Length: 326
Image 1 (cartoon, one colour):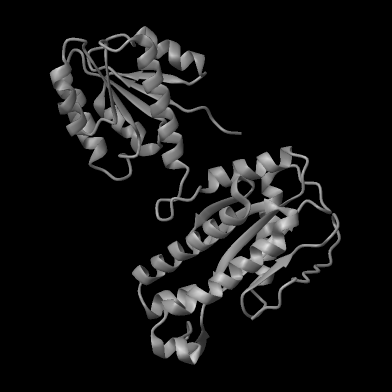
Image 2 (cartoon, one colour):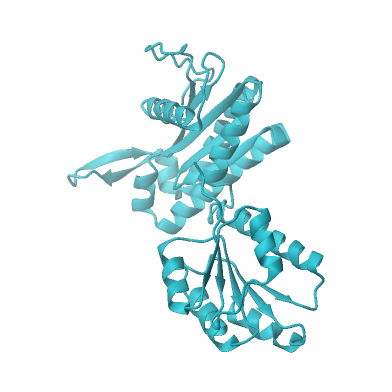
């Protein structure tokens, strides 16, 4: 179960919450918590991210400015959006609040409808910004779950494809984390451009984290999309190695015991789950099976995609990838 977004209101002098803010929170069923202590606000934000923070700046602005500066100076707490409420006759202070780190400034000079519109826009930006992976800008785990839920509610056949790099850690160890980040970003672009290029709005691409990605497509497009993804991947990835490694097709790396062994160039494994022969009721069921299929795909050589063709509780795994692994 998801909790409703929590709204914090900081009023150092105990000024009541403006009726517009209170009504907005009530109309959205958002819990609204009011505090007069900056230290308490900071402690709450450190323990967990609330959705929004309003700072009453009409009476004692300096306390509000100091609180915002402290929150925005820390990468962990800076993500919480802050809206400063200033008096209608203080437009000259707007720049000061933005300079301190405020994400929005509301003044009584705005009509109530505009104030509500600005608050709603702030909430939408917040939900959008925290639901994407910062390195690839692809939707993260929250949006992935939401997309799978959406597909479960629809009548059509869909496929959840779990893509994972093979030999990525060894590549990172030989080259650098910077080169590794470049490879992850390259993979994100391959998946996004192929899926969106072939399917448009019918395809979804998300980033779980690290070198793990999920894309969701219609079941009828598995072969076309996955074949193109692997073809582009196998064309571009060798170019991420130096000429010597690329020509050899491998390099020597050390295992956990310090023994040298051949490390092949990176490949891509994709495990695929469909609702063709199964009835799912929750995204967790899909995720668990997709993880299992991805693990199975990684036992095969080369870049490959495998589709789960089992019926219900059938224990036999039949992969039968339509494309030969390399």
